[in-house]
Length: 263
Image 1 (cartoon, rainbow, N blue to C red):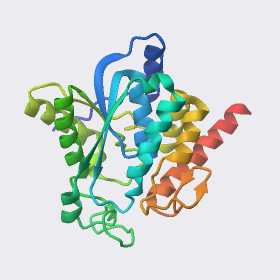
Image 2 (tube, rainbow, N blue to C red; image 1 turned 180 degrees about the horizontal axis):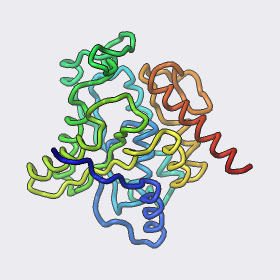
Image 3 (cartoon, one colour; image 1 turned 120 degrees about the vertical axis):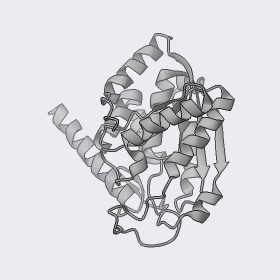
Image 4 (spheres, helix red, strand yellow; image 1 turned 135 degrees about the vertical axis):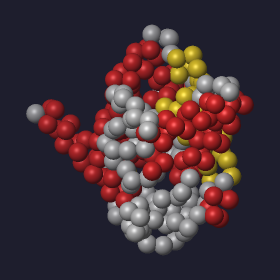
């Protein structure tokens, strides 16, 4: 059985990325970021823009209930390019793939209007089987055609809903399979893998200061129910679904640490 790979420190990686950007010597590779328009993928996009010479984005329309995220992501891209001109020069094309088939074969609370609850197998019924595996396979196909050799995703096994396709070992195994299947190196970077949500907020601050934190609050979307009516201190959302609860709890911990740091 393959052992778990040694965890890297995404905060330290972010520091290295910012230094590389400031010296004009970013990683020369092109990265393709799985960018849904949520908090996590926005942090990953900023991380990639601070690290790589060129960055493109990709998203998937699979009939998700929170399809509004696909509109929000365009605003986030525009705001990042406007507020961070150095990143804007690196930000390349965006790709949106139609994955209606995934919604058609799924029977989940993320694709159908039903109550969110735990299942007998211990997973929430928001789990879409194979979703991340399919996303990464299709992203690798696009990346290969676009000359990109790095995929960046916001998967995390710290503050998460228990999805098995978010685990580090799953992603490392898929990295090997993709590289073998394409006969070309395809690296999967998951800078949030070992961060909780509070640390994700801190990573955003470290990469882009309070401007990036505020951009995340105002323009990203995480709520599973697609609620955009209320702007909480941590962002838009219903405030009750698992995604909102994680984001709100992370914000509270981040702000508490920030206050204690000033004391």
